Length: 412
Ligand code: F0G
Picture 1 (cartoon, rainbow, N blue to C red):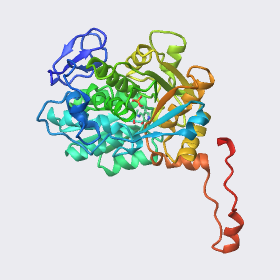
Picture 2 (picture 1 turned 90 degrees about the vertical axis):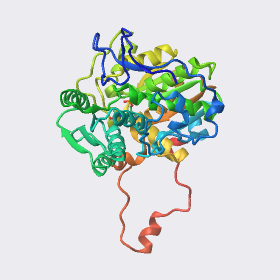
Picture 3 (picture 1 turned 135 degrees about the horizontal axis):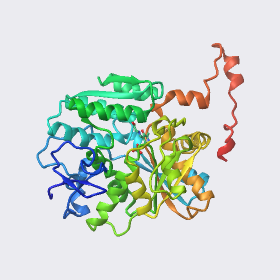
Picture 4 (picture 1 turned 120 degrees about the vertical axis):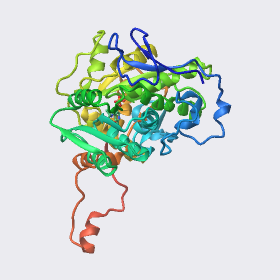
């Protein structure tokens, strides 16, 4: 493996990979990890377990470094024919990231991020989070024996995620503000107190998340036409696109997919920017959506996400909370796949884009479903209602049971 470098995406200034730096010191730009395209082919990976570290040569962590892992990645790619009909496309696949160790795609990034933290000698790690990042960081920090601090927007983190952060022993701090304010706080406190920051502004995390692209190519046996990704802080779409670009640079694929970035309507600064063809985002002061995971008004990685969308000839859109919930139910009911609201945005976006003629009905699309249904049980009760309660007798239960199949209502 060639020596990796940290490089500013704006002014190309380079930094030593052992330096703890999150933004370019000259221009403030985002950093990314770069290395020369490695000389590997798919055969090299063939006999290894399916997961993030299968692609060892493509992950710029020094040989011999002790890896912090919970067997992340290697998630299923489900072909969803009923959902494809519902969305109006020929072929639709769900890359189900809910099957990661802590139930979201964040684990792909944390195995690399926490490995890096430990190799740098960090004794404590921190993040701000809408929930999943904190759940994942808490688990990986526990695995590594490192102290973990998480700062969460008060009252806006789904119960499952909060439960994980607490049980894995993170010091959980609830701030009376939104995610963007929590992120600013944790960035300031990490710098001043020498704590290693593991939000997606940390480019090492994205090195783990890019492996989703590698898995997709292996699972499909080809490059998908379009990959739909929900966007919050915009790290994941950037990481997946980086993965495809690196495969292409290494001569391992001959074409790249179009990337589709989907935001929630109440938290869609990137989509707004692209719609208006502007050169930067206007942050949204009070973002709001039922998909609390992506309730973000000032995403730090927006320049990388915009490059992913524009650079891939991709598309973008926002979806309403109603569309998100209807889609979450359709995924669960038609395919048996339980996802949290933010994840459903990727599929909701596909249905909307087919109707708007932005995706051809004959297309093959992959939707990244980023988190597990059980992350947010309270949302489920809100949108599905509580179960019917009856006295413990046969008449009461038989009155409720009908031999007819359940009505298919909106799912047709
Ligand atoms: N889906 C889920 C389930 C998420 O938790 C997130 C982000 C996203 C999509 C968006 O990914 O930020 O890389 O664009 N959650 C972060 C968190 C912000 O703190 O857990 P992104």
